[in-house]
Image (cartoon, rainbow, N blue to C red; front, side, top):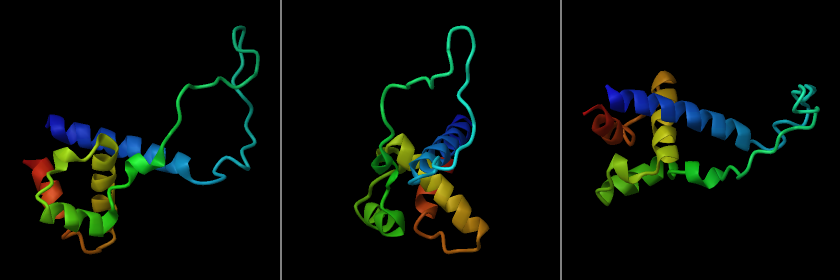
Length: 110
């Protein structure tokens, strides 16, 4: 049960990260920064940066190669794990082939 919650959390994090990685995703943003007594209207800076390459697990080909090398689901980083689960879900929902994902999803379910 804890693994399922962890997988769902990873999916949400990955989706949020992937959405923020799109080029010019905020180009047309018309909102205004939050402001109060402490924050005078300037956007707050958040330290660090999002590195999209952490989300790349290699796609279907990467999963096939990983399985051939006996790489387990746990060997992927948390971002990749979430992206694998997300890709599996989207492909399964779209009636696409998920055979490359199934060994890793089965490992997660166990």
